[in-house]
Amino acid sequence: MECLLSIPKVIEKEVFTLKTEGKYYGIVQGDAEFFVCPEEFDSPLRAANHARSIARQLRKENKLSSPDYTLKKVKAPVIRSKVAKKKELFTEAEVAKKTHLRFKEVWVILNPEGRFVTEAIKNKTLVRYSTKKEQAMVFSSYEDAIYTSTTLDMVVRKGHQLRRYFEKQG
Image (cartoon, rainbow, N blue to C red; front, top):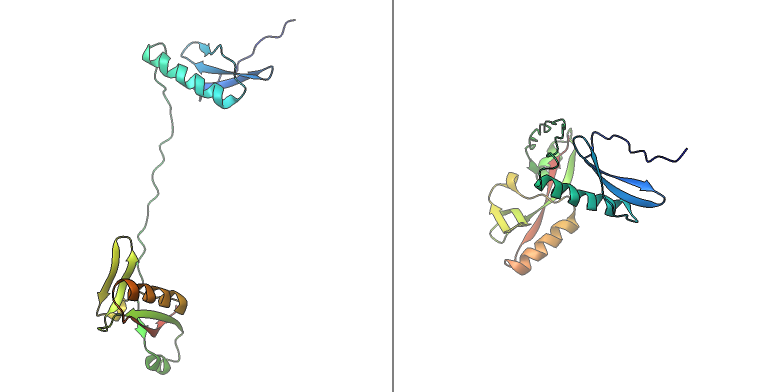
């Protein structure tokens, strides 16, 4: 008996490839028939791309209906906004009085007039200041704070200084 060419019926895919004797052929699945591209390719990617271009041509000539993909619509996950915890900064004297709480050391930058840096070198904003210490930009390490302070001294104006505060943990 001679070897027959067997093409599996694939409902999900409009275009797929078939490998015979080491060569790949592009196949376009129509409503009632298969369209086999006569050109052979060395890679399945090239064969599939060629078959996709043939499918576009067949759709323009109305020999192939537009693909009817029945994909399940997935609802977008609900993104809950994060509630920013209120930032409380304490001086060293205030921390000494509150021994029952735990604190971590943080650094803030002040401009020469004594206002706190609230935003620095972010997107198109160079720097913003505020008089309220709760709005201050907090740095967890001295090195990060001094780096930003030095940059602000060079770009904006000399005289920015660092101040150590403590932030309540937990």
